[in-house]
Image (cartoon, rainbow, N blue to C red; front, side, top):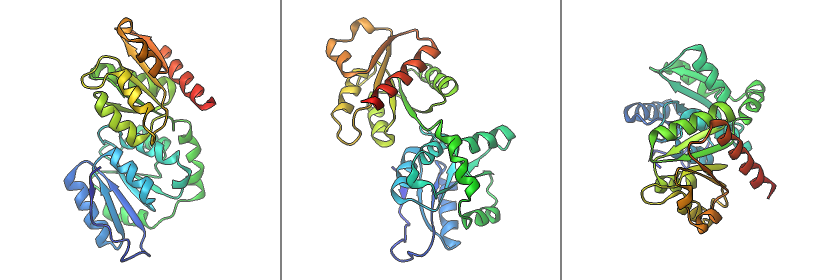
Length: 271
């Protein structure tokens, strides 16, 4: 997690706390400095995963979030925040280079309270920073709840990653995070605690079954159902099958994948 260490909560405990999340260093550092100069406390992060962890731990009054974050993007981050009842009072402000009606609707559906197009209008941002969340804002959380389940897709083939992510978002209304290999997937899973994982079997470093076995032994994250999608199902050893919730052969139809992910999540919830 990349966090800019300029927190002054101990010195000024009465001031509202703002978290800025943007992978553009210039934009993040500028906003961080401006927020502090405006009289607020500020923390900042450069990634969606780091930003989510920061919001969950610091519980700010406001989070200013870039939509185009790598890995866990701003929309996915917002859905995770809105799925956490402890963060119901956090106002979410989206920053993006796109201001069409569809972009604003997507941000609202994900749980953002406000949508701002870059370059940032600092006067308007200052007004938003001092506004508490309203009853209408809280009612919109119900829209985000349906998309609050997070699936992590782990595959070293970027085309396969994109195909699975698209199916899970469009057909299953899941929030999706991605990782490019098993080791990265293990790191992302520990950070965002997904509801399920879709992983390729053959990957450099940790393969999909080894990833599942590592997660099963992780006391922090607990058991996460792992679905293996592979063209080499016949090569998966018996111990590998025991470590995962389901195995499906490539090519896999999108609706088949979504149905399988829904099933393993429901089975996990039922115990």
